[in-house]
Length: 406
Image 1 (cartoon, rainbow, N blue to C red):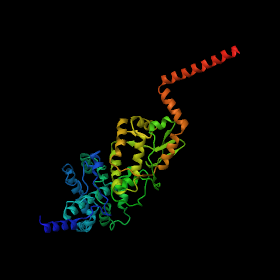
Image 2 (cartoon, helix red, strand yellow):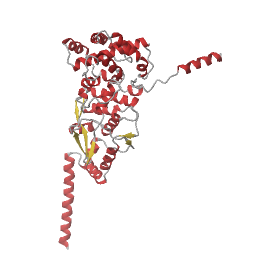
Image 3 (cartoon, rainbow, N blue to C red):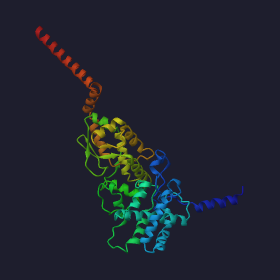
Image 4 (cartoon, rainbow, N blue to C red):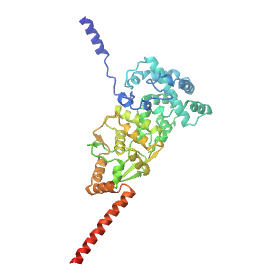
């Protein structure tokens, strides 16, 4: 073994060694143990945005559409193509640092991909905001499919700062009163902006925007959480606990008072799993200390163990089940937390404690046991009442007989 050559090779490895995660990193490849639970939830089906899925052959049909929009956007730029290229080229090192893995693209390839994809998004959002939507647009997107969900996937992003830079470069000098690109983005995804947030916050990308829409403002403090015997929805109902709809526009706004757990209404449709999984993946990778979506998912996982628990939430109006099968809803919420690291803190710590005090009340638990063992069906209830009546009448007869003897 030539030790000199080995030493040279090792030194070369050390020189090239760099941390793949930097402060600029915000777009992640979903961790394997999270992805394997449901890979389709993180994989674009129609359009690739950014470098991570650019070479997927299934998504090549959309490339012609992106190029057509890119061409229209360049015409709006009024001969600023060189400026657009320079704007992205200047940011190439920072753009590369925004991704959690080492990109195999050279600088030229990365600039080209980011430029076309970013200009496509800006042109698309501009047309939607100003209602410059043509029949050709409708036919094209009807044929290709709805790309809205693909634009929200964690792996399918470009950094928001480059979108703003390109947008401002082309439009800020032309229209002084033009809305910001954040306003255009909020408008595009307005169906998720239930709290009607104003554009006074910052985001990393569209997955981050989706998460921001769902956060409670201001955020409650997260406290140390010790796992206890948190009841399921059906078990809680058996102890005379109640469920009601909380009219709040924030799905995280759960409240407990006087034996009643109030939960915001949620429509359980096909896209809810995709949206929740991508927000969870973002928190897993980027917001380790502020995992508010994960807190909500864990709470729902505690409440739901079976179809019976979903029945309770559907009957109370909290869930509107578009999936049709309540057992499918139970399996959905039970699988969301798989692969996600459990945190020792929760924003629902006080709520958990209050629920446990109510649920573990001694007399209430005895009543629950009595009801479960002797009144679990109408016939069983009738038989129990009859038995009690017989015992009561026998007792009266015995007392009367004693009184006669005396």
